[in-house]
Structures are given as structure tokens and as C-alpha cells.
Length: 66
Image 1 (spheres, helix red, strand yellow):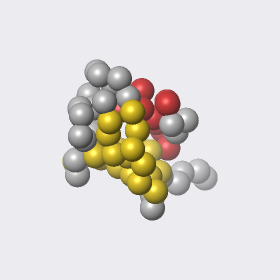
Image 2 (cartoon, rainbow, N blue to C red):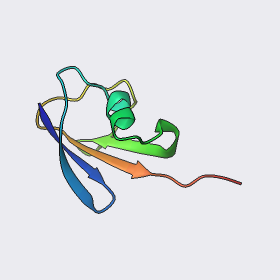
Image 3 (cartoon, helix red, strand yellow):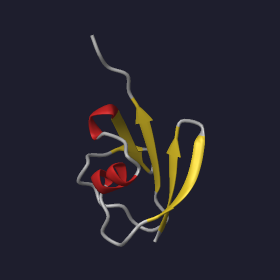
Image 4 (tube, one colour):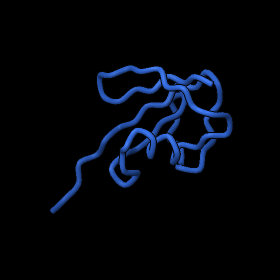
């Protein structure tokens, strides 16, 4: 299935299998979950959230450190 993924200014179409979670998508895109906040269809979601055909997933990278 295909979903729209937004990372900063970049919009991409990503093909993923049925039943994929946000956590699996982050792993596929090589983005550590500790460094991102994820919105699915405009709502902040947790890593275990399932992705469905046609969803828009926005990945917001956060800066942290000391």
C-alpha cells in the first residue's frame, strides 16, 4: 500500500506492507524514534499506531542534547 510521508520540506510516497506501524516506518527510513514526533493525518500518534492506505504521515525531527 502507499502512504504520503512528509519529512521537513520533503514529500515522498512510500510503499509499505499492510499492517505496518509508525515504528516500522521510522526504522525503514532510518530515523531513530527518539529523535522524532510523528503525526498521522494531522494528529500526533504513538509508535504502535497502524498505518492505513492513503494516510499522510508527517515526521518532525526534534533536536535534543545538553
